[in-house]
Structures are given as C-alpha cells and as structure tokens.
Length: 120
Ligand SMILES: [Zn+2]
Image (tube, rainbow, N blue to C red):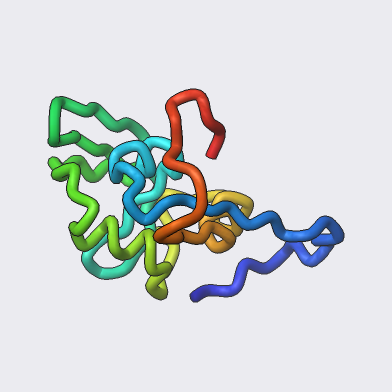
C-alpha cells in the first residue's frame, strides 16, 4: 500500500469502520466512490448509474464501463480484502478518502449493512 504523506498531524485516533461482508456491493461503491481496476489501480468514481443488477460507472479519469452487482466479483473482493493498490494519478483521490478506505474493515458477524441514509 502506498504511503499517504503530508498528513502526520493525525492526533485524533483513526476511526475504523466496520461493514458486513455481505453488504451490497453497489451500495458500497456508491458510498466509497472508489473503483479498483484490474491492474490494482484505485480510481475515483465520478458517476454511477444503477440499472437493476448492473451499473455504469465513470471514473474521474473518464473511463466508463459496465459492472455487475456481485459480492464475489474481483472488485468486491478487492475492496473487502484491501489488496495492495496504487492510486490513479489522474483521478487524484484525496488522501482522506484513501485513509478512510484503509481504515474500513469487513466482518462476517459485525458491522453495518449500509443503509441509504448512512454516512460512509
Ligand atoms: Zn483514474
């Protein structure tokens, strides 16, 4: 994982977020607004248009693609397992967002299912 520099003032304790492993993938994407590409590059999601079990996603670097709502997809597993990644230089994901992602945990038995009104 890349080091997030420039913010070592972190006096406040890092708050961990817990989510259910079975949380709906699209909900997670809509809240996180992060997309891991096949090359393990983390992109920022600009827009996401859900139609049933599929969604069109456009990243900030203007990639558009269709994805399926599958908890077992590569991207879903990537987000849950926090595989190593590089942040896309074009998307310029803010470091607080990467830190937030880094402090997110997924648990079988504990955590939120992410309701619509809930803040990520
Ligand atoms: Zn990108």
